[in-house]
Amino acid sequence: MEYALKGCLRKNLHAISQLDWRDKLNLLQCIASDLQIIHSQDLIHRDLHSGNILLNSLKSAYIADLGLSITANIASKSNSDGIYGILPYIAPEVLNKHPYTKESDIYSFGIIMWEILYGRPVPFDPNTEFQFQFQLQVCNGLRPQIYENTAICFAELMKKCWSMDPKKRPTAKEIYETFAEWQNNETILLELFESDKKLQNIKNKDAQINIESNYRSRFISFNNSCYALLDNLFL
Image (cartoon, rainbow, N blue to C red; front, side):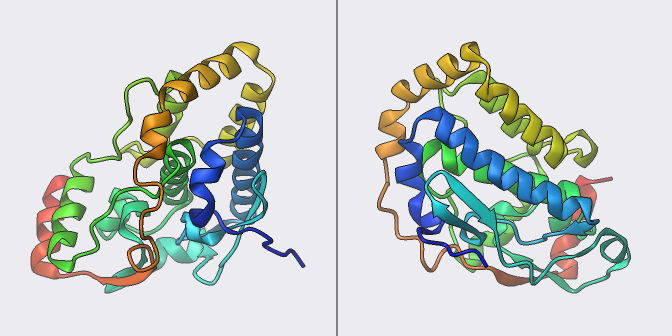
């Protein structure tokens, strides 16, 4: 049995953002490795976010809360009146009533990469009146802001994970192998280190943000009249 001595990733984002890049890459490899194992068993997590990633230390993590996980085969045949999760982590195709896939988990992983990089939860307004507008924007290409001076290699990998076309997203195995390559590439490590120094003001902004109520998984109902608008975006 594993014990989360440090709690969840979300509550430790600011501290993690200050780590050396080799340590951050090790943490990201832990998460990617767990996701690779889940996917290798033909399972889909379906609720991957930084609150469901638990830390043994700031450098070591594992994916938890597999209660919503189902096989890819069952997911492809499922038909639901809604989805369960936290909006910023949900892939655009899922918001448009398409089944969850392994690629949907990869989208969520890309959001977690953003949080580890900048040291805070992805921005999100939980007010119900703005939720459908947010969903429309995501389905129309809205993604978290990538700030100036972000290392190009990291930014490009995040954007691949967020691709509108699920088939263009990397697999968990490919992500893990990318991080392993970066660990041994002094040029990449220097790029990440130099970028970090320029991003300190971004990392320190809103470091103490209140996150308890805004980032809990909830059931999001599909409203037929509203989701007809989303359907048009994917025609």
